[in-house]
Length: 371
Length: 95
Image 1 (cartoon, rainbow over the protein chains, first blue to last red):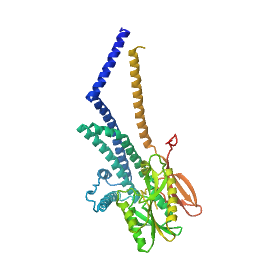
Image 2: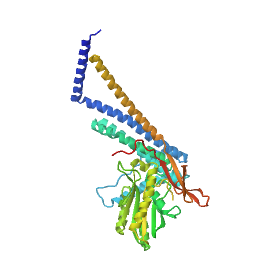
Image 3: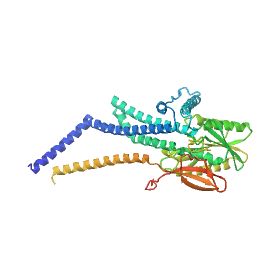
Image 4: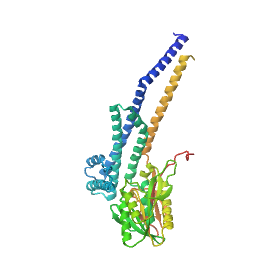
């Protein structure tokens, strides 16, 4: 049996060795290596979660397509999962908007065509939902593949700082992926999403008995009266999953109205907008400009037509979080829609006169919101 | 308690805390994944002769759908659909 003083000496020795080991780890950079090793293990475990989410999304989309009798669903989905759009040349800005619009339209047309062919027995709503589901599955697939790429590239090039950076962003990336995964269920369920606030405001303003006509692809317009003003109300054609072409439609409708000798005195765009952290979901705010979150081609049409005819361009937004915009519309946003309708009416009353024509555009995805 | 036992105790405490923290972190991630599978309750708002009623959402519902006939003969229409978001306990942030 060892005595107390021997144990004490042994303990002191162990502590000293520990200190020396720590010093060596710090001096040789081995400590960093151990840290990176842990980060890598953490990223790999989260990468497995991302892979699981991407696989689940693919499976759910495939199930939906098969349930709706899609032809050769598996190979179609595999093709779409890696579908990409190459952005137009930016160093030559001339006509960049037209080039971008052209590419976006081709992309939309391709998606629409392949689903029209593969799901010819299904209705338009089912096809549009399948198309959106494929886009979400594609986004999740991309997130997974991109994170995997960064990790493998960092390991290959021994760039530990890249691993550190990735480890820092991983919780946020996981949150985004989980949000997309949840959104997929809501789209397949065909309920209105938060981004549908704009179309819902448009529908409420037009009234449920209004006559709608398709003015451009997937976009409809209705005429109604409000306190002596003629309202031209534009929204995407529902209840399928589409955002339509609101800019193109607004431009067309305004030119038609002016050609008929009408005085278009006001344009109001209504859209869902990202709230700042700490703000309440469903809050309504107003401003000037085009409230639309597209890459540019639609937004610029609002601005150009408003400038050409000197029409005041006003914006009303319903605030929400990034996740709330693509998940099922919640009660706060629903309440916000009701408030936005009142705000639009208030603006019309104060900024137009009786006999004027006012154009109101409800911007956003119209899934679950018909006419 | 001698110094050796004290160090041993300290080591055990550190290991216990680390294990608990890692288990809690793992549980948190599992809980979050389970929450992902939880669907919120979705309700459909219908209007009939100026009165609004709510019921559970049924597949095929959409805003604007004529879902039936009112006793007065007019159309019963879906005027809204929304999910009931569960509020987190603890109220508003004091900031």
